Image (cartoon, rainbow over all chains, first blue to last red; front, side):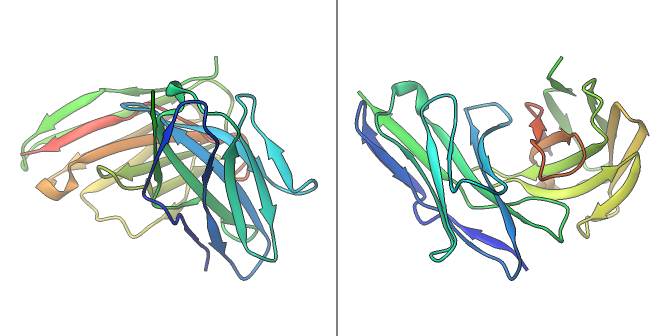
Amino acid sequence: AQSVTQLDSQVPVFEEAPVELRCNYSSSVSVYLFWYVQYPNQGLQLLLKYLSGSTLVESINGFEAEFNKSQTSFHLRKPSVHISDTAEYFCAVINTGRRALTFGSGTRLQVQP
Amino acid sequence: DTEVTQTPKHLVMGMTNKKSLKCEQHMGHRAMYWYKQKAKKPPELMFVYSYEKLSINESVPSRFSPECPNSSLLNLHLHALQPEDSALYLCASSQMGPNEKLFFGSGTQLSVL
């Protein structure tokens, strides 16, 4: 079975401050890991993904995540957030045997001026 | 065209009504998904179609009936729903499987009275 845990339901942060959204996964086999973002009244958009290779993956809007197999983590970071980053962020996992994503419970990032 | 289009955006129905949700994509994706999302919760997988055949049914009640008429269209037929079925219903598609990027529609907000 696969599962993913997002440790923080809400993360308030001031604009231009750094942020880390935490994600831990559980799987008995190899996994693929994803971060999706959901803006209000919209569907989800892929932010970044780890399939294999380099453990540090980056998105085009300044977010990055590092796959840590020993700690079974895939934390999302951004060195300086903007008001427009306010959204719900979902970590998701799929193992190589299953054909669909399992989402974490989500973290609400609230960027304040 | 990199969009998944869902109609209607909002739907209010009684428990005796029959209605359908529609989803369309023209990206040539061969995997299509229905997810259900309750407020402040992550999306929950309902159905997966691969090459127009139902490949995953996550033990969804029979009052939800999916249909994939062709590779671009996905429907969700609703009948005799309960108030607890009120949620945001999200459609998604991907190229070959869920380890590829999922493209989500903006969803249908369903209210069952």
